Image (tube, rainbow, N blue to C red; front, side):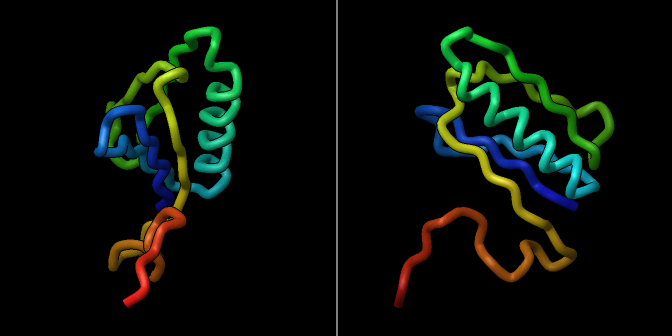
Length: 89
């Protein structure tokens, strides 16, 4: 299972959509990135979740500030924290 996480401007919590196949997650990621690049058009982006049938989310592309894709395993994430930030002890 792959997680597509979208962060909105001014909102600390992210929106997540799960995709079963890596190709589907990559395609959804590219769809979000493309809509972010043309965010001046006030485009509405709709994504559907593969894990929970009927779960959909719609957001204005101009409100998206970050998007990431990572693999989810049975124990949580794939041994690494999603994103690029890490703290050294």
